Every structure is written in structure tokens, then in C-alpha cells.
Length: 92
Image 1 (cartoon, helix red, strand yellow):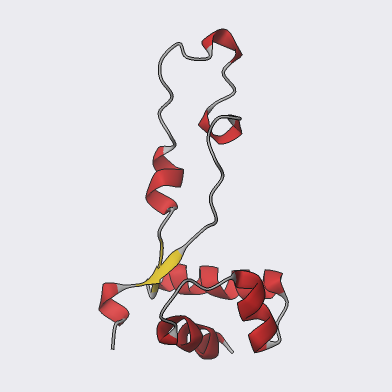
Image 2: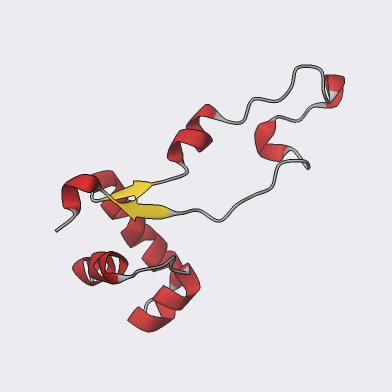
């Protein structure tokens, strides 16, 4: 099943919705997410959002004053869908 997930991601020409892919493969969405994370750890997929997530979003100093809850809880920063891509080392 892990290889099937990777093959589906490889063969797509556009963005994949996690819900659609889980339905197509007949697996629970949470299980599919775990399989994708497996391939990220193995270096076969790249978490496109990892660099941004690790670095965080730098808020303008003083923009929220003392009430700033940080970039991850900010109401002014849009939460985007997580994206993944095939590692350049894995392209056939």
C-alpha cells in the first residue's frame, strides 16, 4: 500500500486532495497521512511547507503589541493546505 500511495502521487499531473486520494485508494484519511509522513521521513516526498513551518512566519515587530499570540495562532495569517512533492532524487 505504501508503494501504491507513492505511485499515485508520482503519476498525478496536478494537486491531489488528501480526501480524494484516500477514497481512491480505499484507506482512511488518517492512515494515508501516516503513509505520506513515512515517505517524507524516507526522503521520497518533500513537505513543501516544512521550511515555513520550522522557521515560522516573522511578525512585524510591534504590530500586535503585547497581545501577539505568535505566528501559528495569528488570526491575520491564512492557514494553507499542506502540500508535498516528489523528491528530485526520486523522479524516474
